[in-house]
Every structure is written in structure tokens, then in C-alpha cells.
Image 1 (spheres, helix red, strand yellow):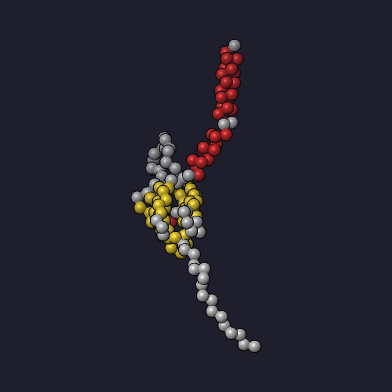
Image 2 (cartoon, rainbow, N blue to C red):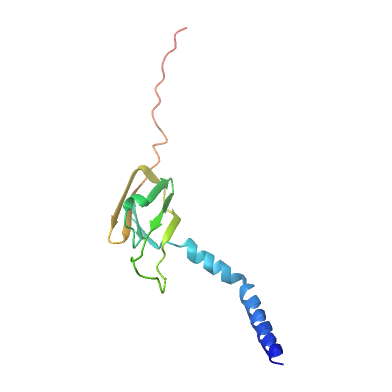
Length: 145
């Protein structure tokens, strides 16, 4: 008799887990949370953009990579946290590899991207790219016969 009571509880538990796991929003919310790491703010003026990214625990800036391309900046790297001789009991701070691409408000000059890391913040300064004048002067040369 006891075994059947346990089976009923297991069936109820299984039913609840299936309902929970079949909720489409569950995995979408989890995926969205991962896609928005690391957290960042983007500031802009008419000609300049500053991207501030929260990266606590970076011990070596050589482990951070920044790639700028037209209207995006991709930042990747590794965050290492840990204390020798201690066992991790609770983990809320992201550690390990990360990669995130940021959409910028306007095209940027890829030749003028500056990155600085200070007190857990990566600060990337970007400058707006302006299209060249459409009416550029074109010289015409005579060709010999």
C-alpha cells in the first residue's frame, strides 16, 4: 500500500514538472537572461558614443577582446573568480567565458575605438562615422592617343 502512495506522489510531481518544463516562456526567459550578459549602458552624443560594460572579476585585460564593425561592437572574454581553499556554496556572479554583441545608435569609425578597464567596468569610447561628401571632386586626365 505504501508503495502506491509514493507512486501517486511521483505521478503528481511528474505532472507538475511536465507542465513547468512545457511552459514555452521558461526557456525563453532563461535564454534572454543569458543573452543580456554582461550588463551594459550605452551613452551617446551627436558625435560620440560610450559603451560601459560591467565586468567584475576580470584579472587580466588581455582576456578581453573588443571587435568594432560599422554599427556593432562585440565583446568577449573570461571572468575568473574564486578563492583558494574555499568551496563555492552560492553562485550568483557570472564566471567563465562570455560573448555579447551590442547594437550602436549610428555607424562608428572603426579606426578610433578606445577601451579602458577600471574597477570592474569596461569603458569603450567610439566616434561617429560620417559619410563623405557625395559631391566629391573628380579630376579628369587626358589620355594620349
